Length: 178
Length: 435
Ligand SMILES: Cc1cc2nc3c(=O)[nH]c(=O)nc-3n(C[C@H](O)[C@H](O)[C@H](O)COP(=O)(O)O)c2cc1C
Ligand code: FES
Image (cartoon, rainbow over all chains, first blue to last red; front, side, top):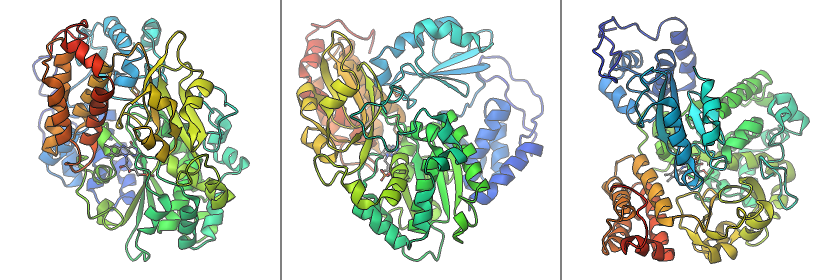
């Protein structure tokens, strides 16, 4: 494993720290990946599951982590990066403590999801989409159809899927995420 | 049932019977409700006989294309001298569609049983269920159900003592609408970017890991146990209009109806009955303007077309659109059609995998032109430009994402031209600040 330093904040313009990279795939995380191995005929097929493990452990997927996944699965770092950046759910930079996704695709949009989004931006103080609030608590993004179009507005806060969110419900819901 | 509302007597509840009944989620709860009988029957039959039963039932794919399920299974090689795979498409991301999610949340064992029957029929040794990354709750419920299936001998090395080995693996997607396209899904499963593949070769010859593969939608597979238990003839008899459309269909209804939800109806049920009787009609004081009946990828219908539409594969075509995934987006007279269409175009622009030029450029340009129209900066020639671009986006790419973007644009201009003209003539207040 290379000891390339991990960028701890590519996001807020804060200078990088140079703490040595701590590998993810040791101990329990390594065992978890090994357990999946018999389910697939190739190592490469473990890439999406491996990236999920990294994101769960670290909150985001740094270049160093991509390199580690590549090393474990015998793929080049460039290949891994190509895959990571294809999928919208993998974070390639740090995000707030709570990551909020709000659906604004047409079925939700015609039923008022943009007002809910505006209320969420106001409550969190994020100001704009994709930005992290100054207290580091929230990042808010727009997301495409969450597959719950009958229950406008569906949002995701981290791994929690919450339906029928209205501007009025926003403060109560988000208060649960300190 | 018109889930989450109580079931309507006009529905035919097969797949949705236990929606809302948390007791149906466990292995024991499911067997108490008659579960896992279909797969036992199937395992006692030759794979070919199961395929014939599916053919006779008339079941067609519920994922969007409506391809006959029995015929699809029959395209798999008869010999299993190399591994065969079944891939269950649980990527549900077509705007307007939210039915597969309820199947997984409430009746996970129905899906597992359908998968096992299909796997036996196509001689697959492993089932991959590819679940979209955002479906965290359905995934957790499916994980529990798969573990229970293994613990009870319903999956693994000796399924129900038949001597057949079938393994089940859940695979989590990571946010990409295109991975619902079956060959993109295969690439994604292999740990690649989710780019659709050029066909041929078809998945039945060279699918995931280059091996024979069948891909079926969640709802298609969840219907299979019912056919095994009650027979093809019974299933085929569930048809109110055209004998080529059989069984029940879960219709996700969203938008401006009084009671949005999932409604399960017999094929051929009039759309009117669904909207006005089962869904409680439009919101108070509003009238119907348009319906997109098959998820967002199909032509928009106006109120007159919706009024005479029968909900089956042929009926929706006769009324000017397609049944698709049956995610029905209902829009009332308050809807700004230009804005609704723009937001769909933006969806496709965001979700294009960018492999084909017509799609990558076409989805982006149509979105920008619609933005400029909404900002009050549109030109008279813009509508023709949109139609020309749409023409170039149809039938020319590896998959049909680009065609899907063109469908609502072209039908929108045809059927709601006045709303576009109002923006162009500056008779309407811009709905967007800048283009
Ligand atoms: C862009 C695109 C997205 C698709 N998304 C889905 C999807 O989310 N779920 C699904 O079951 N089928 C989807 N399909 C259809 C699949 O390619 C495939 O036809 C289907 O899963 C086959 O299963 P069936 O025969 O049981 O319907 C999509 C197709 C395209 C072109
Ligand atoms: S459009 Fe918002 S969940 Fe489908």
